[in-house]
Image (tube, rainbow, N blue to C red):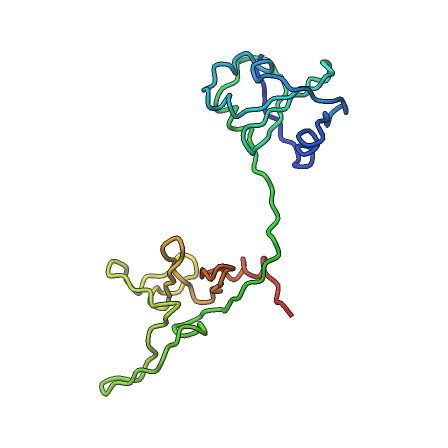
Amino acid sequence: MAWEPIERSFERKLSARDKNVCPDCGEELERCEAWDISPDYIDQPDWIRAITNAKRCRDEECGFYYMRQGPAGFFMKPFGGRGLSELEFAGGMSMTKFRKKPVEIEATQWFKNGDHPEDKSEPVYSKDSEAFMSEGKVVRYYRRPDDDGQRKCEKCGEIMHVHGWIDTLEGGHIVCPGDWIITGVQGERYPCKPDVFEATYDLVE
């Protein structure tokens, strides 16, 4: 007998895992070995079997089984046919939902060199050309010898010459005109697209 993963809501997973109650019939769940659910499971790698917990409903007619690998949980029910494959096993896992903690951040919208309050750009005067602003300390010029400054950005459509560059914990990131520069809780800075920023943050009064 094989076992087919069935999609269920996050709330039903919590019900089975934390309340130890079958969400189908209300009976108590009992601990069992994974191969009690599917004999073919014993052929799975040892590291998978070692971190997998299995429970089943005490009511045999219900047929509800629960298997949890690591922090991810998924539900399985019999459908008959072939044995449990590793692909089916992996396909049954689902992501756990989290809610971001309410944390205040500082942010400023960047359009051109010198826009960030800590860029500390200053006018540079030259006899041969018009005055221009020195490169920002936070958002620097985006300049690469292998990238034509007249190339249009795939994300915003502006030429790369008007873009900025900011050093991040991941190494660095291109800044498009209009991006928000966020200062995180540990002082780290990173860019955020305007639509994502609007959907994520509210102004603190």
